[in-house]
Image (cartoon, rainbow, N blue to C red; front, side, top):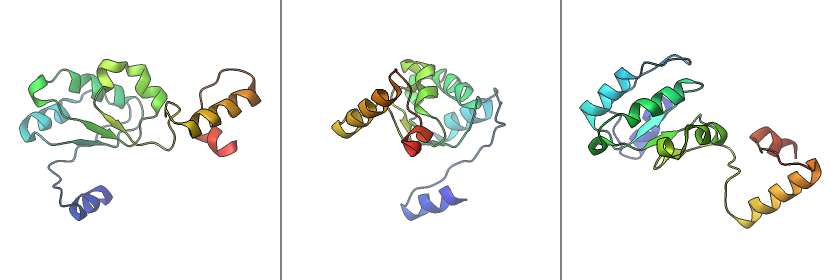
Length: 130
């Protein structure tokens, strides 16, 4: 309901809403809806393992109906594990991305790694504790 209200504020139209279990693997309802409604974007609030199934299923659709996905619950490390062919052209909204290419993030990563004296993956809880 919150996303629908925000979309309305921006003059966007919600053309469908589908829920899947956290461990869901059958994304036929989603891919069928994408083929029928041809949305401008998919807003993904899926958590957990079902994200992999979603991106695998969307990859199987014809290129002519490729649709960008904006994921709200997909951490950078998990998205990277899908491989570039599955996430290219999609968007992630997350509290921190280690891959940010800017001076402030490079300095932050250097300080974290110097303190830990090893290579580590920076997660949001690391940022909060540092």
